[in-house]
Length: 164
Image 1 (tube, rainbow, N blue to C red):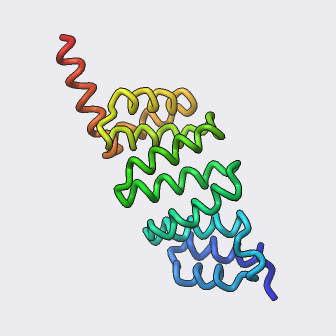
Image 2 (cartoon, rainbow, N blue to C red; image 1 turned 60 degrees about the vertical axis):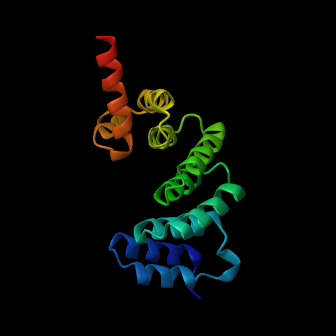
């Protein structure tokens, strides 16, 4: 029997190569006793992200967040999958729950800014984006081209014009 760690390594390699069917087969071959381990669920989430299988990604990430709330990736992935299904209000709630546990996680703040922007909550989006940038300056550059923040940029521009 091939150890779980080895199968995870193989599956990750397949994902990196875009060989998603093979990655899935490796994950399916993992000992049933290990299938709900954090490392397995996290890699499954990565597989479903690459496959753009948002519904299953949300379910797997939710399972991981509930059993291991200390995993910031679980919260990020769960919220992101919900956003990809246009369930932005739910995505916002998940990100907020994750931030209670991980207040220093910049990607959660950034994604929360995106969800708020998509919901038309522009002041909140601006505040959350500021929080993300304070934690990681790279988000300043990344935010400029993110289509989820287009509403925020338009709102800020209109604010500047009305102040002029």
